Amino acid sequence: MNKAYDCLIIGAGPAGLTAGIYATRYALKTIIIGKPFESIITHAWNVENYPGFKEISGMDLIERFKEHARHFGVELVEEEVVSAEKNNEFFLITTDANKKIKTKTIILAMGSVPRKLNVPNEEDFIGKGVSYCATCDAPFFKDKVVAVVGGSDSAVMTALLLSQKSKKVYILYRREKLRAHPIEIKKVNSNEKIEVVYNAQIKKLVGRDVLEKIELTNGEELSVDGVFVEIGHVPNPVIAKNLGVKINEQGFIIVDEHMRTNIERVYSAGDICGTKEKLRQVITAAAEGAKAARSAYEDIEKNKK
Amino acid sequence: MNKAYDCLIIGAGPAGLTAGIYATRYALKTIIIGKPFESIITHAWNVENYPGFKEISGMDLIERFKEHARHFGVELVEEEVVSAEKNNEFFLITTDANKKIKTKTIILAMGSVPRKLNVPNEEDFIGKGVSYCATCDAPFFKDKVVAVVGGSDSAVMTALLLSQKSKKVYILYRREKLRAHPIEIKKVNSNEKIEVVYNAQIKKLVGRDVLEKIELTNGEELSVDGVFVEIGHVPNPVIAKNLGVKINEQGFIIVDEHMRTNIERVYSAGDICGTKEKLRQVITAAAEGAKAARSAYEDIEKNKK
Image (cartoon, rainbow over all chains, first blue to last red; front, side, top):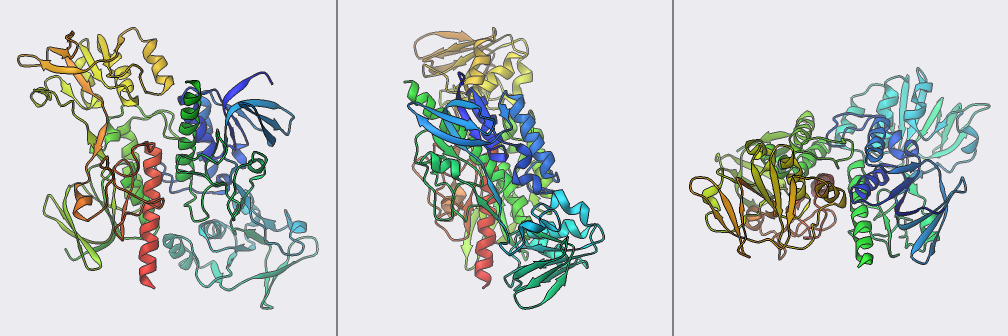
């Protein structure tokens, strides 16, 4: 409780860890509260577009970011922030382990969580056929029939991953055209194990102990052993709201070009902030982390004068 | 001349090469015109803040970016663009080897060039004591006395590099306080070979065949064998002006948050664009390259409908 930090970063994904690298290089006493291996990037079994690495798993990439941040002396506390409040010139943060930490600046980089299907019984089948993380669960579906819900890059990448071991992979997408990178769509089209079902909406999940089939709203039924839900992510800005930080209509934190929020000495970076249309990638999240750290540093310097 | 590209990128630094990686992953037929080993990043003998690599030379980093882009099928032409014009739905680019190339979109990522001292005889001493690239020339000054002009990160990093082999290193800065990262300033202060001279302005360079001394505007003289000029970089937006692209007061290309310029299907990324205050780093340039490629892809898709 006695230690006061210059910069406290909430979230340990690409944005948070890069903010840590930059903040320590600006000689700020820096702490990150978050769990690197819970970042969404760890769900990516293969990252091919972080420049410098032709191919690397999300797990390995985040490990490298983590080691990089540690190398410069960032403290990493693998807990969760449960509350944040302003107290004169400091902010006071409390973690789920009841740790209390004082800091001059805060960078909000908590990313987002997977969006659910919102159909009956969904919760009941979690771990019994329903998964939100192909990287974690794909190996359990060797020689099985699976479905991927969604039409984005991550849906298509998940289908390609599953096709390596599973017997058959459906992609269920509610629209008429996949919206993934064309290069990935080509791979899907030439993959014999993958079948894309367009205009597909799931009505319900059926099974006794484990998932057995999917019922679509058009009455069709598909026998499957697993469903991978890849329909995007939603930000979780509770702590931001605590601090009075402004959120846009889609729930993302509003920032300016230097990653400043409306609250002085509070910044944001990565998936949790910006417009809905923003390109959300490791490279862009990392760049925003760097910018947020620079703004924190500048504002601390300004206050010294 | 017959081949038409979807995306032509001018400049092969971190921004241009990342734009190439992303553009090809968007299945765009992509060509880069530029010389990776002329990018400013190659002047950095040690990059410590590109996340994922604790320490890497600028040369090695750009090599990795280049290989990454090539891996996805980007064509790289190591020439220079001498003119660009719009011709109905295409742009027509001409290189210094008189190659003519048609393209639907252009990403301007030409970076910047080192700023000169602007003192008499400067040109005469290039290669005879005056250098704009420590990575290239530091080895020539083993056991010699050198001066670095500037107070930024790159000036301080250059001084630290030179201190490894040179006998004595002056940092000549026109202000009263270095503006490099505090962590680097600490290293300078604890380095016995480095002496910082504040409020220092160079009046002229003196020497018979090679540089022998520097005369400052306050009359002081310093005997040195070499001067490393590290006073920033200026963008070179000639081709942008050709195309009617708007430039701000400092000479940088004006872009929106998606890296679009005022000219349709022309984008910009990296050091050459944005406000003067923008954080200019490998990570931010790369992120902008990714964004520019996405915008090019989206605009091409839109035009198809």
